[in-house]
Each structure stands twice: as C-alpha cells, then as structure tokens.
Amino acid sequence: MPETGDHGASIELESLTKRYPGSAQPAVDNVSMEIKAGEVVVFVGPSGCGKSTTLKMINRLIEPTGGRIRIGGEDVTDMDPVKLRRKVGYAIQSAGLFPHMTVAQNIGIVPKMIGWSKPRVRERTEELLDLVGLDAAEFRGRYPRQLSGGQQQRVGVARALAADPPVLLMDEPFGAVDPITRDHLQDELIRLQHELHKTIVFVTHDFDEAIKIGDRIAVLRERSHIAQFDTPEAILTNPADDFVSGFVGAGAALKRLNLTRVRDVEITEYPTVTVDDPLQQIFNRLRTSGSNEILLLDRRGRPYKWLRRGDLMRAQGSLARAGTLVHDTVTRDATLRDALEAVLTDNAGRVVVTGRRGEYTGVVDMETLMNSVHEMLEADRLDAMEHQHELESLRASQTHAEQEGAAGPAAVSGPGGER
Image 1 (cartoon, helix red, strand yellow):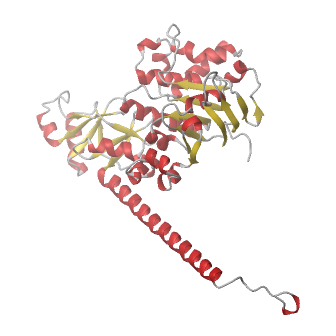
Image 2 (image 1 turned 180 degrees about the horizontal axis):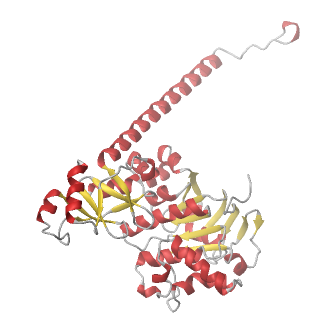
C-alpha cells in the first residue's frame, strides 16, 4: 500500500499510550491503528473514553506517554510539535477563530507563519472561501462575531485547510450548531472530501454522524480500546459485541439510510420559472406542464416558492404574497435520511435538491425514497437468511465432525498397509 494518496497521507498509531500523573489508569492505553491515505476515519465512543485525547496525540497537542506516530511513513513522535502542527489541519467545536482577526486573517494565519507571500495567501484565502461556500467579497473582511455558527464552522474548516495539509483532524467540529446547519456542514465536508481527498480523523459522540461521513468507524471503549474498527455497513449489519450493538441502537436498517446519498437515487425534473418571468408566462408554463404546481426560482436560480394554480389566480399581478416559501432543501451529498426527514415535514411529499451555491438541480419525492427503503429492508432480509444458512451449515459440519470423532480415530495407512 502506498504511504500517500493524491492529497492525503497514511497515519499509523503504534501502542499509543497516555498516562496522567496521579491517575490509576491510563487515559489512552496501548492503541494501535492504521489509517489509509485519503480515508475518513471516525472515532466514536462514550464521553471520557479517550477519543479526543487520542486525536490530539496525532498532532501532539497532547504529548504521548508511550508509543509511536507515523504520518506518511515518517515518524513524527519526536518531531518539533509546532512544525508538525503546521502540516496537520485541525478543526474544533465552535470553530476556535481568533475574535480580533478578520475571516481572511484567520484563514491566512498558518500560510503567513510558514512564509507564503501576501499575494499567495490572499489567493489561497479566496479559493478556500469559495470552496466552503462563502462569498469572498462578502465575508473576508468580517469578524467572527459577525458570522452565524455555521459560517464560523466553515471558516474554521477553511483555516484548517489553508496550508493544504495532507491530514485533517476534526474534534466534534459540528457539535455546537443546530441540527439543520449540522446536516448542511456534514454534506459540505463530504463534498469537500470528494474534491480534496485528505486523510481525515473525525471525533464524534453521534453514531449517526459517524455513519454518514466515515469510510471506516472506530468504536472505542474506555481508555480508547478498540471495540470494532470497520466500515459503517459492516458495523450496522454485524456489530462485534453488545457494546457496539448499544451504539448502533434500534433500527439498523433505517440507519443505513445514512449510507446512501441523494445522488444515488433518481432526481426528477420539475417545471420551474423565475421571479423575472411575466405572470402570464408563468401561468402558461404551469398549464402546459401537466403538474399541479410549479417551482419559482430567484434571480440566482435558487428555489424560492412553490406556486399552485390557485396561487396564480389570486396573485393579481404580483407574486409577492403568492405561493409557499421553500423551507427545506437537500444537496446531492445529503443522505437519504436527511431527504426523508425533509419530505416528511413537507405536506406535498417532496424536497428540492440544490447545488453547492444553493441553485436548483431537481426534486426527490416520497415514492423514490420509500422504494429505496424497501430495497434496503429486502437486502437486509436476504443477508439475514444467508447468514442463518451459513450458521446452519457450520453447525451441521461440527455435528458431522463430532460424530466421526466419536467413531474412533481416523485410520491412517502407512507403508506396507500398516496403521
């Protein structure tokens, strides 16, 4: 296996241990793990199990008591920790932005420290703001207090990526924002990873979040002992023990909705018009569309309102008060669970799918989502039947072996027919 991917670097933890003075037990005890280049690995476990301590030892914010850390094959256990941290991006809960610095200054701090020129720092800052979905002209001069929680987290991720590090460490980065913003930030991270292929180690206590973003999940017990380290599919369908089952919880089949993205199902076209279209043209478009409603887009092509025939009849020359505002949207990187929740809160049973700048790209409806759920449940049923068949075959083989053993030792013929 190559040590580095296109943009990420492998991480190897070898017998990593952390003991605090005066504690009877180590906080982290003898953890060994290999993380592939370009992989997203999520640490999930109960509070106090040592997952954040393990994460912080990778960039030596917490110094290990024992063990080794290798990044891209290079032993960084004894490297200058400040030099190491400049090569490893780090994003935390509540963003951790410097309040007295502008957005641009926050993002550019590490590139500036390692000697990048001002034009290069400025160019990188604008590139990253665009990458995390913030308009550079609007946001680069703002201070953190002038941003929403979700915007602060986006800037925090941009700052962690500023010097283009191969490794990104994320310690519950979306834990302090509301659920809707959190879903959008998770989608944004998934989209970014498709473009950047970093090696990401992500800490969360939320198993659903782990399923959604992780290529592999490490379920950790106390002192960061690894209960199971596998793909989300494998953990959902075959948890290693009761401790892991407790994290999976009830409804494993429905949790698998977090493994399928909106881009994996059929996204249908819907009749659309824009706010600049004449009212008669909008009415004609609705009449010829064969649909009971039409989607009104704003001047940037973003979903604005759902319009029905009755809305247009009552419009009286203006759309200002006509129609129903579009509240919930999902991106192509959203999970089917996100889409299902959005559809269930909408009386009409559909949700608009948008692109990275919020532009309209299509619609997903309840029928499509329910078909996907039924397919997953059927796949689970077939897997369970196959697993049961394998168990029965194994028991039959064991019974057969026991019966043969009871009949006496097998005869082994030697030269000359001797036994």
